[in-house]
Image: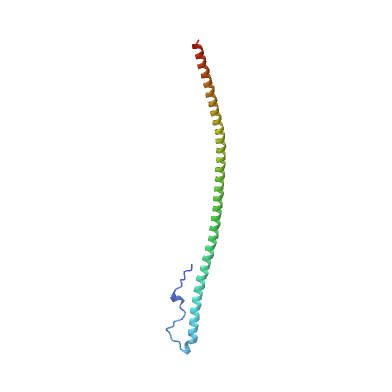
Length: 135
């Protein structure tokens, strides 16, 4: 921003305390015009610098908005990739659990069949022992 600051004193172009006579009007108008020109230059300088700052801030805002949009897009891509990886992992776990259940059912059936076979053999041995000891 400009080093020139706008104050009431440097913006004052007319001193209302002084009385102007008819003969002083031309010189006073010249003095007033010069002071008004200085005030206008101060205002224009400050206004131009404010406009430059606003343009700079707008440019920065656009850049930051673009950066945020790119970061959000990257984050969304990353989240989608992680979700896909988790989904694939869950599918693999489901396949493994299904095969584990099938294997467990097979083992249970084998165990049941083996227990039945052992029970039949046990019964046959008992019957055979009873037959041998009864004669």
